[in-house]
Structures are given as C-alpha cells and as structure tokens.
Image 1 (tube, rainbow, N blue to C red):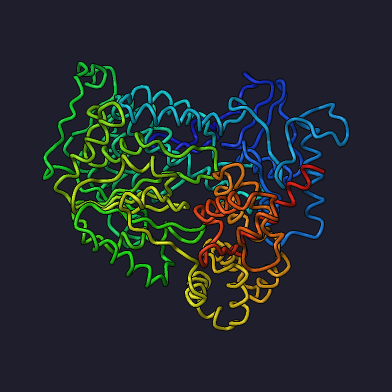
Image 2 (image 1 turned 90 degrees about the vertical axis):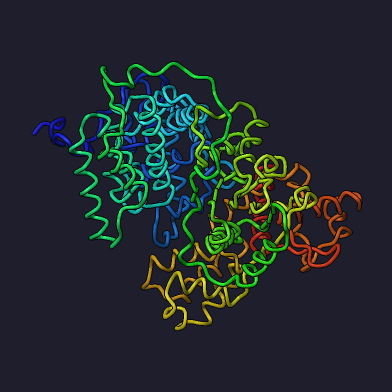
Length: 638
C-alpha cells in the first residue's frame, strides 16, 4: 500500500514526512523526527547510534552547554563503562570532523565547543528545526495574547510544520526515553493546544486537524488535546467523527483509568451536540468575520465570571512538611486584608511542591478559584523571566475576559485584574518569581484574596511591603527518608536503613537530589541501596551524581551580580564549617564592608544560610557546586 494512503480516512496520520529539502543555510539539523544533518545539499552519515544520540542531545540543548555527566546519563542509562569519557571524546572528535570537513586534527572548530565542563553545539536559529519551532511558537503565543488569532495561526502552522515524527528517531530507545527528549516531545504537544485554539478563533481549523490527529496518537489519554480535536473535527464539518472520537476516549478513560471525561472534554462534546462550533470553509461565518469592534475594558459581573482552577497536580509522593504547612495556614489567617505569603529557599528544596500542596489543601478557603502563573524567575533555559503584562493577560483570560477585550499597557491590565478580583476570594500562586518589580502588578488588592509566591530570592522589598515570609530549609532526616521510601518502596528502604541514612546525608536532605537518586534506584530494582550509596560516595566532591541539582544551581548562580558570582567559587577554600565576613575578606582580598555585603547577597539568593548574625554555612551540594566552578575557572585560565 502506498505510504500516503496507509492512514486511511479519519485515522491519525503518523507517517514520516520526506527528508527536509537542502534549502536555506549551508548546514541544517533535524531533531523533530529522525535525527538528520545536511551540509551543502548532502545528508551526512551520523555514524554509530550512540554518536547520533550524542548529537541529538546537543541539538535538544542547543544554545547551552551540556555537562559531561548529563551526556553519560543519556548515552548509558545504566552505569557507564570505565572508558565512557574516552568514548565521548572520540564521538565529539568524529562529529567535529563530520560537521566541519577539513578541520585540522585536535582543532576545536566552531561547531562543537568545549564549554563549562561539557560541550555546546553552536548553531543559528534557522539551522535547527527545534530552534525554528520555538521561535515561531514564541511569536504565535505573543500574537494570541494580543488578540490576533489569524497571525497566531500562521506562526503556529510554521512552527508545527517542523514536526516530522517522534522526536529523535534513529537513536537507541533508552536514550530516547531520557527526559531531554521527552521534554521536547512535550513541547510539541503543548503547542498543539493553543495552536488549535487560535485556529478555531481565526476560522482556520482545517490547518490544525493533521497536527491534532498526530498529537492524540502520541498522547492518547490527553483530554485537553482530545477536546480540541473534537471541536476541530466539528469545525471541519466532520461532526460524526467528532462524536465518535469523544465516545472512543470516554470508553478508554473508563476502561483504562476508571474515570469519566473531565469538564473541558464534556463541554466540547456538548458544543458539538448543540452545533455551536463555527464551520471552516468558504461559505462559513469564519470566512466573513465581523467588523472589528473597539475593545471594551468593562468587566463582567463577578457572578458571571468563571472559577479558574489552574493549579498544577499535587505531587503524589509529597510527605512531611507538617510544621511548614501549619505555618502557612497561620500566616494566611493572620491578616484581614489582601495577603501575600512568600516561600523562599535554596534551589531544589521543594518550594513549588509545598506551595502547590498547601494550595490544594486550602481550596475551601477560596471559593472563587485558584490562578497559577509560572514566572520563570530562575529558568535554566534560554527563556527570560515572564513579563508581568503577559502574566496578566493569561490570568485575565482565565477569569473570563475575551482576548479581544484585553486593554493595552501594563497599568490598564493590572487595573482590570484587580477590578475583577474585587469582592471575590481567589488564591493566586505566583511560582518562581524573579523579583519584586515583576510581582507588584500581579498582587491582588481585594480583601479575601491571597497571593502565594515562591522564589529563590529573599525579596526584602516584597517583605517590606507587607508579605509574610517562610524560609524553607531541607526537610528533617526522617521526612527525607519517608520521601525516599514513597518513591522507591517502604519495604526496600526498611531492609537497608544504613544505606538510606547515607543516601539522605549525601543528598544533603535536598528533595531534588533525593528525587534524582530515587529515580536511579527505582529504575534498577535489582541494585541494593548500598550500591547506590556507594556510587554517591565515589562521586563526593562533585555533582556528577546530581545533574539536575547542578543545573538548578547554575540557574541561581547566573542571576548573581558579577562580584557575588565570582565570590562563590572561593568559599570552599575555607576548611571550617562556618564563614564570616572577616574570613571571606581574606579569601577574596576584599574590604571587610564589601565582604559583608556580598555574603548578604549570597544569603538572599539562598546559596548560603545565615545560622547566626554574621555567621554563614554552605549546604554540602552548594559547596560541591562552588568547587566545580573553581575547577572550571582554573581550566579556563590554564
């Protein structure tokens, strides 16, 4: 049967697109489908599957260095061989010569660069399909947020045209299962939802139908995707297929999960039954849009506003933190007017998990809804912190304001937001804040509303304005052990209590580090926990066993002023457990006043803990990170 007929009418088309044409830049890289590279009209042979996997990883992280530890983790899902580092260096050399023919032996080249303890692929946006996808998606989301669904649809269409099959095809299956590639696949699926929304609004639903069919084939139980597929099929005059699609998913949800369809999917089904979906086509109303009306900023009555429920799912393995949960409740109840709670602490200490868990518990206190915004204050990728105006547009849309009625300008958006919250009891969870200025326009002003903020920064300006702070420290050894038991099984931890105690200690009780180790242990149930503890023991002094912790701390370090960033690598030189301004002044050759100021800044960023006035300690994993920074600086200068 010919490939273009294999899918059949009304069935998801999961066939691969033909190879990319060798047009545009001299070198083109493809990751969103089979891993391929073209150089001057010729497709390159990428060699061994593991070598291809290494290139795929560098493409997935294009624009940032990939630490060697992450490379080993992707190429060898289990324990890497003793020769792993040499193998990686050989693959890098092969890829350099492949991408830059004629490159002299041992020359670094300009494509694959040794950088920050790892490797970086240098590529322009138009050379990599993933970067083109992200740029077009960014423009599409901006257009959608400013009420231009037609423009958004054009950009989404260009973005999703880059998607040519399952991400990173052609590399070994264990490598493809790594989070770097599943996260890219998630990006594609996440873009399909707003793309469908924009296309439905613009009357071009037919453009998104193939994309949605592919998306639901990749994630067959994603209800929001299916809701949009049902609406898109109806908009394309395929009402019978829309109803069949709904019935098929309803049966699957009942059989596989024992649940009924959620509100969003039910609402889409009801709209199709009531024939409330605009048709796409030459004779449809969408082809003759109504004249543009002036935007209105008059809010709807509170009784007619929807009740947003935007909280992320609660963490299934959340445990402990009883004192902190009680303290949050106490702080929330301590003010009569609009309140702001701030949870601040070290990267990976569990701020977001605690905030989401408490917000779910506090649901009854906020009958008018819960808003959630990820502010990206310490994003380790290339994205900047979320703009306050963009955050407000998202919250206003969730509160029922049509995109076309959103006003222009930050002040007008903030004013409308606070007007809509007047007389209501709404919880606003503002996760990972960059600073006080980003937060100010997002804080509700109505009595009965509460803003719950998480940040890696102490945000003294926010506290000075009345926010009630909670500094989050690592959990107790008992809570940390319970967290490990929940993730890998209580029977397994009870059988090896000494190994559990060592794992908890070597993780510094940091929840992110414990999650990394638990994932490793859960993936190899035949490994005794004593062996896992031994691996951590062998890696002491580095973060090779905790690549996610290294990445999180890099995000915090990048946000420091230049002097504070340069001071952190010097601190492990002091052998004692505590640091003082006098000690740091000697280490860094700074005046005492400057040393005191920089220590305060590091403490505000929660890279140091002030245990008593003027006395500071480094968390064990932060000390290892600082030592790596120092080693990296020595290699750079040598």
